[in-house]
Figure (tube, rainbow, N blue to C red):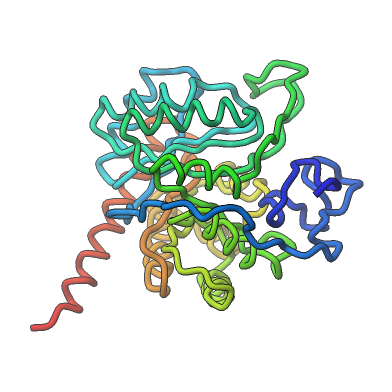
Length: 341
């Protein structure tokens, strides 16, 4: 798509603005909101490995950039309530390389699920990262095109004048990852416009080799259920890890709500922010959302997303670990109740 600044070929990215404008250029309508058809995958279908033991609880690894000590402290705590840790590649920071982060997490005995973005890496560098992750034994890679870089200023570790590459998009990256024998994991933003093309775009990622999907937050489980129905009609069969928003104050809720392609339930936000004990309320709301999402056909796990707390990285990790423990316990009890006899 020549008119897409991110060079997307198989449907829209997750960052389309609510107005339908491009994330990179507010004056430019996203091609897919202007009627461009979503293309089916037209490349070779790889012998992609299926996901084995998908994580019931996948937790965002929320840590400051270039801080090994905090990384170890947070990862150790998160692992107590998580089956895998989602390693981000955030647009406003330049962190250690993905292979280096994965190696540190493997040394701690945790299971990293590593994000690769096309924003800052051309195809050659992406191939190097994929080869490195495969050599380390990393099982899953989250394949994303990537959000746009912010301008320089407070809160960013990205140097002024940094360019954006977009040599590949998420669909072609999924093919690259699957061809290397890793579990290519796709993302989907059911609430982002144009909603009509999202199922077809996910079908293209599946054909390219994606074998697991992580969904962005939606305002209610019913929204995700409707999307999954549309996905099945488009031929999507891969299992889904559904996004669960974890927040305990107005700041952490706003940080999630400000992300492109993401929807939060305003009533849930009010329940937490106005509670006498916002921390306990935030945990309960997250667990309730997780249980409702896990009840949907096709959902095999949840992604505990967001920093969770403004009290610091380690307290936030303890909070998300508690959410994960409660989700696991509830899921175990429900599974045992369904067993015959």
